[in-house]
Image (tube, rainbow, N blue to C red; front, top):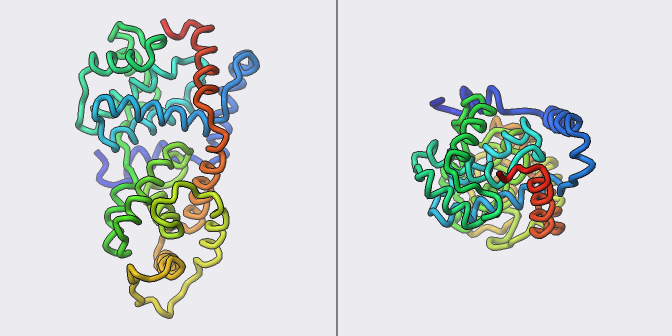
Length: 302
């Protein structure tokens, strides 16, 4: 296992630009132009919300830890930039990704338990034959070139708690924002520490417990404008009782004096805000119907 992200297969083989990801997806769609016209599917972020909710529900049935759920979501995202969605049974992919992630995160589940729980959730889409999930696991591993170790932002968040005097409310909100970043392409775009820092910034800019980032679309712009070197006051200490604005300013000064890619933090912040904006359009019913249509029509549930 790579001791750090920079020497890992995640950094070397699974980090792309937005243009590269877009090109890969367009190629997949062009290879299945008939399916693209015949079986419309929701916008990718709406699908990501649906996949996330389904994985969380399945994980709760088996008491799966958050890190394993996060790893499973990265596996699903990696898989679907290599394989066209309409050529697969997404429910089987979700179950298999979670099964494999639990193995990799050293909290394995019995394959029969995974299949049983998945069948309870999606009886029309999961075969009773456990060998189907085993075959799908092989395909998943193959498409990821056996590069299965995932580095997550949670460690950076925990490491920065004392350095930035983050309260428990700050940590809880930032943790939730990190959970949400798996619904975007950020795991394929930026390093985990960048996501952690963007999550901390948003947590500091919001009141603890606030459930939406709507109305904070200018926060990323503020970060870009404020993140200039401030050598004076570089020894200032954050006070947990300071106002929200003071806490954000301290954080941005700390960020500006470091070696973090500020533009990547800005882009990550914007990506998260965009996710929360599009969430208003989410319909679980629509996602279910459109997925069911191509799975049934193409016999992918067999």
